[in-house]
Amino acid sequence: MNEPHTSEAKPLDFIRQIVARDRESGKHPAPITRFPPEPNGFLHIGHAKSICLNFGIAGEFQGRCHLRFDDTNPTKEEEAYVTSIKEDVRWLGFDWGEHLYFASDYFEQLYQFAEQLIEQGNAYVCDLSAEQIRQLRGTLTEPGTNSPYRDRPVSENLDLFRRMRAGEFDDGSRVLRAKIDMGSPVVLMRDPVLYRILRAHHHRTGDRWCIYPMYDFTHCLSDMLESITHSLCTLEFQDNRALYDWVLDTLHTPIHPRQYEFARLNLSYTVMSKRKLRLLIENGLVDGWDDPRMLTISGLRRRGYTPRAIRGFCEEIGVGKKQSWIDMGVLENAVRNDLNEHAPRAMAVLKPLTVIIDNYPDDQVEMVTAANHPKRPELGNRELPFSREILIEQDDFMEDPPAKFFRLGPGREVRLRYGYNITCTGYEKDPETGEISVVHCTYDPASKGGTPEGRKVKGVIHWLSAAHARPCAVVLYDRLFMEEDPESDKETEFTEHLNPDSRRLLQGCYMEPALADLPIGKPVQFERQGYFCKDQRQEDPLAPLFNRTVTLRDSWAKLSQK
Ligand code: ATP
Ligand code: MG
Image 1 (spheres, rainbow, N blue to C red):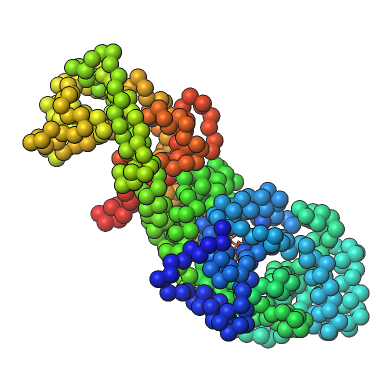
Image 2 (cartoon, rainbow, N blue to C red):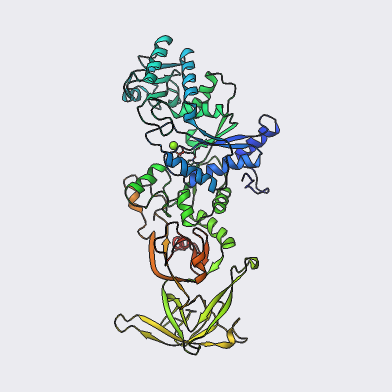
């Protein structure tokens, strides 16, 4: 679905300005971008920013965007991650068409380019260990020292490199390095490693290779082989640009894509890197990559986020060059606004309390009409059964309410949403627990369709007919971390800042009968409660489990203003 996601009125961000300029000048009439994930984990909301940028540009400027797996690190990568990444990109609404690529498909070509560098005298085989290479690299203030193997003749380098490929040497015993400048102010340019020996099974190339190219060598050449016009990455790769350009310049490639860096997404109240997310999973602190509290695309999907909300969020935060933090509330608001507009309304009672309407006929059931959306009549109505015994929320009744409590209490009148006005005439308590077990009310038959003229009733509450309500359970999800930046304090593990209330399971809830047919994952607003969707994993066929996507209001904003 390569459609523009940016509204016309918004000024173009600096990358789109470059793309637009290159199109106008005829340099690149149709941009070719790529999204290059490493298949070593699931995608997160940070990746969504990059996906929306790369695929967004392709759509808006009539170009195309490739999905390319940067699979050069076989010890960490798996086919299952490839599958999930493809699913997530598609779910976000983007399509790479025929342009699905794997860096591993280029291994032979990359190897040939490496031989070319050696033949040109621009690369050499180095026998230093990783530790020795590190020691001779120098620091930000001191230049590095040349490797004793730096001046090996071309023929020896070529021979050794071929034997590295043939598997004659042990893992880690030799590397191929670019011969650039050990005194370069850019540390990355001090004869970086291009190839290493690693006997690891690759999820695509199997055991065909025992040498693997490094990221900096692979990435620029993959971009070049795919004729990428604008290679977009995050700011940490600024220094890598020199090497990116060096490789392509030195090999005199016919095509030389340009790398542009933008600020990565940093979000408060979460951790983003795959390494940290994996740690949460491995320590059993969350329940997998798609735990609804994880800021992974699959977690957000399971939580009830819509692709439209995520795309809207990415559009709202924009693309810039300055590092910044986005408040989690911005993401939550994006989904809240989206669901407010699109999610149908329904009623569910999470902590039920029985109300008996004593003056309502015992055996009578009538249907009342409820709007599926208060502002969108085109979404239609539904019929709800009303009867003598109903369920309301425990919190909507107080034995001895303060004046400002506009819900039910002895002698007080409230309106049942879409139903009648009821007045409380008494209540019963459980003799053992002392808890209120039943509330007695009378209803006003004249209040069908609205409170009669001249009478004021401030409270409107939701309800269900007890005989018709269906059981369900809900998980009230909240932010996974309590600290704005769980990683700020270097002394404390970020896992110390987990929110103990990030997952609260409520059982014994009830929902209106029609929700039995609600498809998994489809969002719904439980009136007065928040937005919910049925979880992807259902264990009890008689009581579906709902995930709370987001509350109706930003409860954290209130807290921080206190
Ligand atoms: P992580 O550090 O979370 O593992 P990564 O950058 O190593 O992320 P890759 O699979 O290599 O993950 O990333 C694929 C693309 O997504 C890269 O182009 C990268 O720049 C981009 N990306 C990753 N994280 C973010 C982020 N927080 N904001 C914007 N883009 C991101
Ligand atoms: Mg990475």
